[in-house]
Length: 267
Length: 218
Image (cartoon, rainbow over all chains, first blue to last red):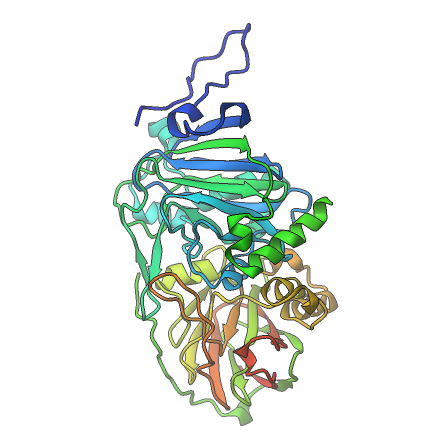
């Protein structure tokens, strides 16, 4: 895959809004007239986006072993959040893939997984925090590494949430996209190394207006001794909302009811 | 980091006659209790097959709480049994399971709510009593600064929610039985918040919720 970066040069005053069509490199099949924005998240970095209902977010691993921690909140009421147990038990699953719906603690569908080339994204594995980062990797601080410094997932997400008035205690259990953690018969975690490949794609269709905070820091169970998290390509596009015959809606009756509950907010 | 998390049965030597606190939580009701560092808490499944939904909070700082994900990460697996250490969202040890005659407790099934009952079973289930209403009711009554934002994924003591290697989640019949108990030693000053689960839509309480006993030793 080509090296994809935002230029770090300042744009000319005549064209101050620099919006290169990055999505053409990693999501070229998207309809050009539907794309809203695209971005490249360097490995280890964090951010947050407001995404409207009817928008889909395509996420593409640009490097092997990428991890992308996601924490969705309802934009209209930040007290309503993605709820890991509610999502898993409603769908009798301990992994996430196409057909699954991310459910809030209020019984509503927040986002649906409409595309997935990997078959497994991890809802169990927690976040790399600064203590584990320091214990696991050689120090890579700003003074020596500038923007390639090593960042922790948990603290990064806390910074993003603080921009919206949320405290560290509001940080929820994340979805670790592009990572796979199996559970053996004894209940032990087995981390799948080299799960994500360059080009691995996951798409979330937003069923409600979302605040989505993200971090591309490594998965805490990743045994790689070197801090080298992968980049993630992001493309938001106008996909529309779930049709009546939607795959996720009909995947399980629980999903149909969760989508119904969300639709009541928008009638 | 990894340790086996199969069943580890461990009996306790503590005598209920010496407990400083001993009360029975009726079926379907909540309980909020302060437990100090060094004290031992015992939860007893009096009649068997009764899920006790539990959350732990640090008495200080406000908002520090049991973290299912940090607890699983620290022990390298999902089930709780003797030797498991409950970790907080900021990485502190909150409590250690020091005895367990059941042998397996759930970290993933979460607590029932009126909203999740609607999704899981039928829209018409909205008005059935549920654990998260219990949690909120107890927190509102105590007025200790905790609320809905603090209702993180909880522990279900005496509940069996196996994960398959294929990534499925199952709700199996309880592994508990009348009189089974679990004991935790508090590592810091804690609030214990429990809901003696009123769920009638699945077998987690054997379709017949029953009382639970809470004992504390100093």
